[in-house]
Image 1 (cartoon, rainbow, N blue to C red):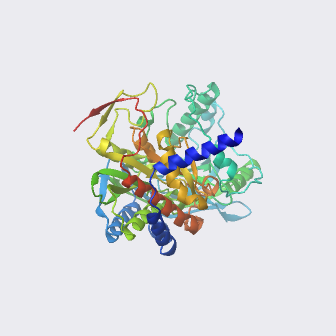
Image 2 (image 1 turned 90 degrees about the horizontal axis):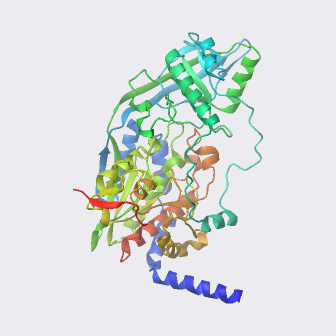
Image 3 (image 1 turned 180 degrees about the vertical axis):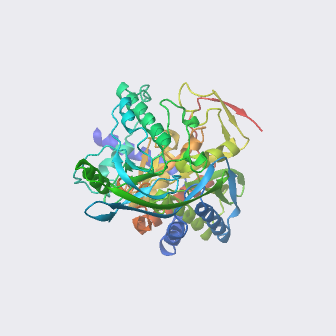
Length: 537
């Protein structure tokens, strides 16, 4: 009986796959071009070595925008343009940086990196540790921090790590993704414990105290430090507990000189300074940090198209965020995704496809600050709710989804933003009707172990801007490699972390998905909407 069930299941799966056309001739051409004449590594080198890092609002990001536009034009894409969005704030670039420690016994450089939008500083000062356990502890430091380097992170020696930094998906992890089900939303996920609320309040008071006292610089322990990596993002601001996300102060929207200089250290160097202070040994630091700031209220997404034929008014999109953080060169986050998407459209042009629907590529900016570029694009072209990105949360936002006339002409969006690791499949974002379609499209890539279709949601990147208003938006499943352990938001995020074969394969898989979405008789299925639709001009 069990054998009969398995046979019937396989026959059923074959029937489903047979119903979804797969153009093996086009895939063969994509593989030939993508494996034998690939440009993906040269694209990746240009985006990282030449135009990295690409902090949102920076001149370097704008140069990357302009270069990507010129490449699209060179390859013959249509309507290549820089599409503006606003408001952002100010640009920030680190021009020079060093931090040196001196004790009565020795002098040594400190492995560290300043946080974005920190004020540039030059000067020497004593190091102190801000030991605050409750509100009364602030009194003993009042008036004593100016001109000092203030350490604020509690420190414990890192535990020995006997696990590999890099890994790929194995059969067990892929099976777990394939078997994922829709989890019921937790009503308690946004409720903090009394202890957590107390910590949040103390953190707010500490940051406000530091902004008031104006030390020379604030030193903290990198939130993830492995094998020389320093992970960081932007300078922190005082955020009151419970303050609405949209109303929180942003360092890139402040006046010059109003953001504390904030520096993250790796565990070994932070630990050394901490232990020296515990021994009552005086430590002095010398900082030489030059930054440039300028108006960057307007930022840009790079957009280009392969024009469709009989269904050219309908759109299939692919994209990745072009912006990065500033300590590395923005390789795995997300020069990888941008390079893969650029190579995917180059492959399609190189083999001369004539898609039915228009294929549109977008390289977003402002992703690292909260999906700003893709969210602005979706608002402009497709629609939004008054409480944007809340349409899918029960009990939140307006129950009316205000959309443009192009909303119904949209088929789907495909995104890469989990590093450069090999694509092993795709997340359905709970869009179960796409499962048989994507299984059929992955079938030609089973030799590359790219076969997994997961019902799971995955978050944190630009497909959410589409998914939030009911448009099909998908992220590919990738091998984690060193992304979450070493490179993500770190100074180690450089060209050397790319794996050429993975990058080539990924571009081919993405190109195939986009092509088949553009050639279907019907647009991709959509999840049921919880909101009412209202078309607006």
